Amino acid sequence: MPSPPIDPEAFRAFEHEGWERVPQRYHNAFASLTSQTIAPVLDAVGATTGIRLLDVATGPGYAAAAAAERGAKVIGIDFAQAMVAEARRRYPTVDFREGDAEDLPFPEASFDAVMMNFGLLHLARPERALAEAHRVLHPEGRFGFTVWAQPEEAIGFQMVLRAVERYGKLDVGIPQGPHFFRFSDPQECQRSLLDAGFISPSVKTLPLIWRLSSPDALFESMFEGTVRTAGLLRAQSADAIRAIRKVLRQAVLPYQEGVGVELPMPAVLASARKP
Ligand SMILES: C[S@@+](CC[C@H](N)C(=O)[O-])C[C@H]1O[C@@H](n2cnc3c(N)ncnc32)[C@H](O)[C@@H]1O
Image 1 (cartoon, rainbow, N blue to C red):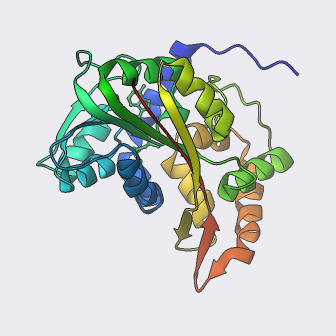
Image 2: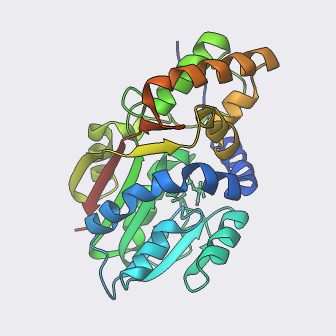
């Protein structure tokens, strides 16, 4: 079946409105998970003392703060004013600004390193963000990003999508965006980085573990702490939501550790250099 056309402005507005609403709930659900990739991304972009580093789609600012700890001169940028406020509250000594990944408010060659931790998959026009990362990098500067691995591997997503397919519907009329798992494909990462003008792309998988406090926390985290996946879940009927929640509680049982759950949620880390 052909995919419906994407309206980038409608999708961007949907994402923007969503991220403005969730900073605290995103933190509760995902901080301990997305923070697991920070050190490998900082290593991949060569984040050491004195380098000028831009953290794009910084969210609550975890990666920017970690880069500052390494002695980098950091700016974190996010298009959601509420995320920027949350990042400033958490890390008052780090420079956080509002701005769009697809239209970065910096002159060319402003940074030695640019990173984006779980940002690219939320963008209406990811190619523009890659081109912008390239533009603001100094020659020989490094760019690195992470996204989720395919749902067959990042099984929290697989469980949710299967449950929606079985008890609800996938086509719920929320604004369509680019495919959520587009950059989970290493070849697509490499191709897109080369198209944006980068050289020497490298892609690897990082084995993250999502430690959830209870079997119900998978549903709660996705329902409360995300934007696109939450939009899909919230658009289901009340009966479907009840059924999805129940089946997710059962699906995670093989991954129980004590009262909690430990789900494999690997990520793809792609990095490259500006010539
Ligand atoms: C999944 S969160 C990632 C946050 C953080 N980097 C982390 O690793 O936890 C995605 C973030 O991307 C931001 N975002 C989405 N689209 C954006 C855009 N076009 N420009 C800047 N930020 C954007 C959202 O506001 C949100 O804070």
